[in-house]
Length: 432
Image 1 (spheres, rainbow, N blue to C red):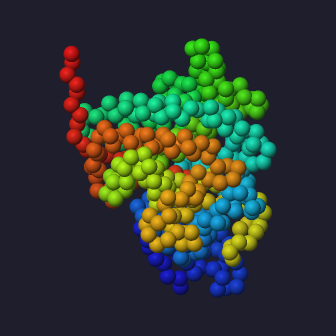
Image 2: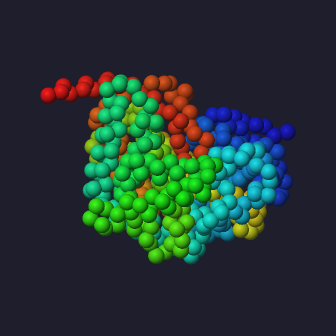
Image 3: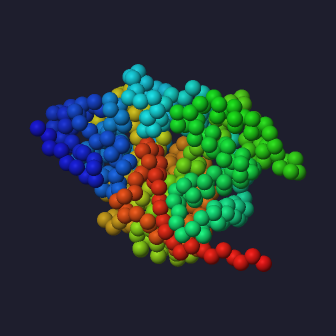
C-alpha cells in the first residue's frame, strides 16, 4: 500500500503505479489518487507544496483539476522553457484536450475554464501563423504607450482610488484598490474614459467566466465603433488603432483581441500588485526593501516574481501526440500546466535561501516563446507605481491573521479573495 503525505492541505501519493519501479512509464490516469489543483491554489505556502510534489513525483506530477479531469503539472524550469518554446509536441489549442469528450462536473468550473474550447480563434489559444497574425495588433498597440505618460496616468488613477477610502481608516484593498486600478489605468492607455473602461473590462470578465461571450463581443464592438475610437483631435486612440488594424479579418477578431487583452492584462497586474502588497503586510524585511526607493522597489518586485509568483501557470498546453518525458508517458490529448510559479523552488536553478537569486529576471512569470507577455515593462511600471503610491499615502496593517486569507480558485493567477487593512485615516483638508 502506498503511503500518503500531506503538505499544506495537499495530499501526495508518490510511488503509485508506473512510477518507474514497475518498469513502465507513468500515464496520467495510472495513480488511483493524485493531488488536486484546488488544494494547491488554496495553499498558503505554495513553494513548500511544489517542493514536496517535486520530491514525490519528479518534475511532472499528475494532478486533478476537477473530479475525473487530470493534467500534468510541470514544475521543472528547463522543461517549462522547452515546452513553452515549442520544443515538444504541444499546442495552445485547448479544443484538442481529451477532456472535452467527458461530461463536466459543473457547467462553470473556474479551474476548467482555461481548457474550454474556443469557438473562434483567440490569440492565447492558437499557434503558428494565426497566432502571429492575432498577436501583431496587440504588440503594436502596447508599443505606442509612452512610459512617462503611463506613470503619470497610473499615479493619478491610484490617487483617485485612495481618495475614496483614505478617510475611513479601513479598506479591502482587493476590492477598492487592486481590482479597479488596472481597469482604470489600462483603460486610460487605450483611450477610454472611466465608464467605458469599466464597461469593457466587465465584458471581458463576463466572456471568460461563463457569461454570454456573444453579448460581450457585441458590447465591445459597439464601443470600438463609437467615440472611444478617436481622440478629440480626430486621431485614433490606441483602441481605435486596434479596431483598424489590417491583421484582423473581422469585427469579431477585433473584439476578441480587446477582450483577451483586457482579461489577461488586468488579472496579471492585479495578481502581481496583490502579491506585492500581501508580502509588504506580512514580511517586515520585504516591506523595508519596498520602501527603499525606486531601485529597492524593482528589486522587491523581482522578489515577488520568484518567491510569491502572481502567475501560477501559463495558459494550458495540450499534447498533439504521444511522447515520453522523464519516465512519463504523455498521451495525445493530455493537458499540461506549465507551473511557472514553481520555478522559485526548483533546486536546479535556485539556492537554499528564500530570496536567493531573486534579482534575476529569469523567473518565467511573463512566459517565454511565442506566447510570452507582450508588455512586461508596462506591467512592472503599473505595479511599481501603484505599490509606491499606496505606501506613500498610507501605512496600512493587515486586519486579519495571515492564515485567514484565502485565494481565488484560478488555474493561472494567484489572486487573493480579500486583503482587508486598517490605517490611520487621513484628515480631510479644511474648506476655504
